[in-house]
Structures are given as structure tokens and as C-alpha cells.
Length: 239
Image (cartoon, one colour):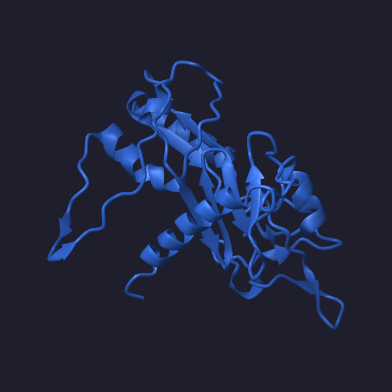
């Protein structure tokens, strides 16, 4: 919060605030990681040895005796508190349940977004960021770079949403990390953990993903699974 304020303050000092669009979003939901105990009773996190501040200060894991919050701390509070942080949705960082992938996008666009504190529940995806920035800046996405053909954009501009309109959304959206996978089409979402079978949820009626409908709606589950497999094969083509 402090650094966002510094950025906005600097834009005001530069006289550039009215001509700047600010967008802020998180990369994932809360993490479930715990500090781990060493044989000598001290604690560490998995990436403690490579977690440093930009000024060279090594960070400390948040453990008994260490006050959480300062810039030289790097904390983990386990799955119980991660669930609390992500309430009411299920799961946490690296899962493809809503607790892992559902994050807010906060946008400031002087002269365009007039409703302060307005909220929309239209669905977007990080793949929409590039088309959004291109439309705002009046840029064009190139078809070639040097001697290489560039893959086309798959996202859609969020500008209509910023303008208070109903956007023509994606026909389907996809996620995968470390085998945790999901596909969403409309309000239907098919989600699976690594090595586990698919589960099907109606997000309109069950945003917390508690009632698995895969057996009751096998035709919907199959349709979404087919979409996911086609997307996965296309993304891995040539690898």
C-alpha cells in the first residue's frame, strides 16, 4: 500500500496522473506454506537461501520470536490461515480452485472510470492485460519480430469493462501449474489437482466449489475436459 501511494504521489508531482492508467492485481491467492524446523530447532522456508531484499539484506522466516511484517521478514502461516485469507473460496496458491486463481484487479483511469469504488464481477484473465494496454495506448500488436512470426494474442481487452459496458467474454479460460489444472466455460468450471480426477462445479450456485457435479453432469464434464486437452496439446506443441 505504501509503495502504491509513492507511485501515485510521484505521478502527481510529475503532472502525469491525468494521463496514466494504473492497474494492480495479485498473482495468486494466499500461500499455505509453513516455516520448517531444522534439527537444531531453528526454522527455514524452502527458498530461504535465495530470498533477499534488493538491498542485499537476507530475509528471516516468520517463526516464534520474529515479529511478522517488517521488510526483512518472509513468512508462511500454513494452510489453516491460508484458507482464512481466501475465505469464502476454496484452496490457496498453486491450486486451481478459486482460492488459488481468483484475485482482484484494481484500476485507476482518470477521465474514463468515473465511478469511484465501483465493482464489477465480469470475468477477466491475465492474458487480457496486453490487449488492454494496446487499446489504451493506441498500439498495434505486431505479426512478426525480426524473422520470426509471433503467435497471436489470445486475450481480450478489458476496456469495455472499464467503461461500464458488458464485455463479450471468453468462450473458455484455462489454468495449469504443476499439474493443478482447470477450465472454465460460462459458470461451469472443471478443476483437478495433480494426479486427481476432474471435479465439476457450477460457480453461479457454488462459488466455494463444494458440490462436485461431475457424476451428475458427465456430458458437461466431458465437454470441458475435451476443451482442456485441446488447449494443453496446443500449448505444448513442438516441445
